[in-house]
Amino acid sequence: MISFVRGPVASVGLSQAVLDVHGVGMMVHATPATLGTLHVGREATLTTSMIVREDSMTLFGFASPDEREVFDVLLSVSGIGPRLALAVLAVLPPEAIRVAVASGDGKTFTKVPGIGPKVAGRIVLELAGKLVPRGTAAEPVPVQPDWKPQVVAAMTSLGWSERDASASIDKATADEDELLATGNVAAILRATLRWLGQDGARSSAARAGSRA
Image 1 (cartoon, rainbow, N blue to C red):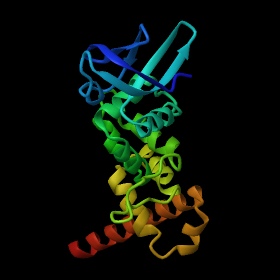
Image 2: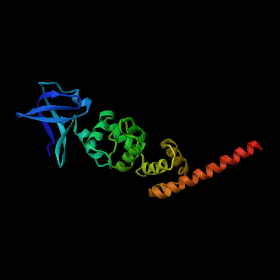
Image 3: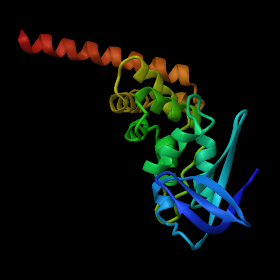
Image 4: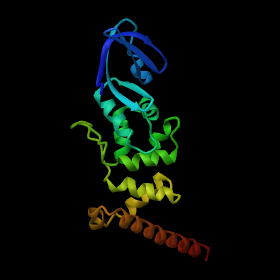
């Protein structure tokens, strides 16, 4: 594996650059932000990840090891290839990706061209617990429990919006400390759906009473 490349920049394109590494032109695909830091004739160093296929070997370059780490983790999501993973990093910085995954915020990923609600939900679901916000001691980043993105994903597949699903889970489990401690996704989902049914019944009764 080639973990980094260093050398004078030979050329910079819209989606890739070529570095002269001891007389060998190494083509590296990168985000617009990373490419914007490169200047022809100046020496540069890029952290890289090599994707090996049967018919090709492709280098992807990053401004930092953190970007490469997030890129590699994104590749573990079913349906996410290197081009789409790079597109995510082109739109979202690594910490924003970590926070979105930890908070179950799939909507953040729909900002990336080519990613719809289903793929966004899959990213949140499959990466839960794999990407943790780093934050700082002065500005801690709130982290959702590991089970919540899974319950939210299950509810969105049943037709609820992510916002309504998250709010319903919080209300349904407000006094269920023992249930939350188990982290049992199926049990929490059932409790939330049961609460929604009871709440709907209460709302219908209230409307009937007001008409009477």
